[in-house]
Length: 458
Image 1: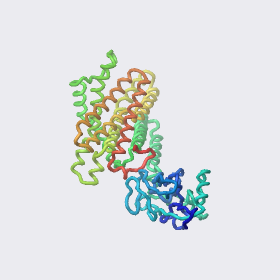
Image 2: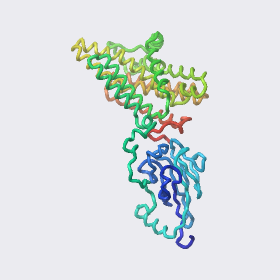
Image 3: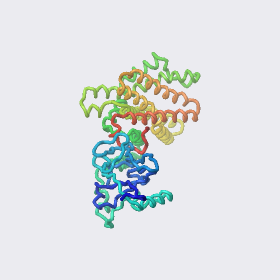
Image 4: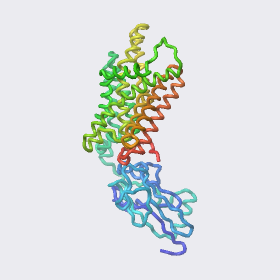
């Protein structure tokens, strides 16, 4: 119908997927002055069922109206919102935004639900749409969450564990939950054995801290590769190679650590820690990354990418894993036994064990803003150097000096007051988080990395 009061109304119609079998009820009107976000998030204008369409991101795509003159017809563009599985227009993966034409098919994910873009003529719709937009209320047949017209309750709805399948391990954090239960049982089992209990508690806290970083990175890396990085660092600390590092950085270079009897300026203290702790320990923790890169060069895909460091995210993941191994061995093998023995001599065995536990928790949990922050930051630069080989040496030098500087600053301010220590810790954590966000933006596998709750930088 065309006439004085005729108007073309644009809408999307669900034409494939589990809900499409219920007919034309699932139509979504588009307002000429408002964009329509499509996704699983309840805040979207077009909400798709989260259980039916797991391949759809929370905010997957958006349909935006193009600016038009009052006398011209409205037109629309479809844009992908950095979705995990991509948006396809007429079978082609969408890059950026593209104008929609009547009959265009929008597919959310390669095999996800399909929406058809269409127009219809309705001379009454002009008045209805104007009232709806003025009152901020959707017109009939407008934005709504599809509801299946079926009041029956299925067997899988009553026993959801039967139908969740792989999503139970991928999206419901089943494995971290299972490991937590296992560690809790082990903690109960080692009550009365302080040393074994400290190992269990320390390992669990370190694993939880690392899992937090892993989720932020958003890239899958085989667990055995990550564990190998931490174990390699432990073996280096237990090998004669550590003696060579100590001799070179603390005797040949001006990195001798101050004793309790020495009185030196903060500047001299910072210099000593820069060479004797920062440069030495960060290079030591970077050795597993360099070894991983060297080994992977002789492998073929996909093992080459799984094992090696080929981008900044790989470097961060392996670098922080190396730091976990370093922190565990240093804390459980040096600091905790030392304070336990000192306090036990002064106050008794019970007080010594309690002091050891009190030191264990903040040292390992604080590694997110300590050893993991420095090593993860250097790992970012190692991956960046591989990604941009022409500037590799400049990139590596900047990363090495910066991570060593943060490390030295933490050690030096620890002798002053707690407030400065908080500032340095927050600064180190901020450096690591900035590196993770930038690494996610630079990742060549970005579209295949698993989604997190944190927004990628534009």
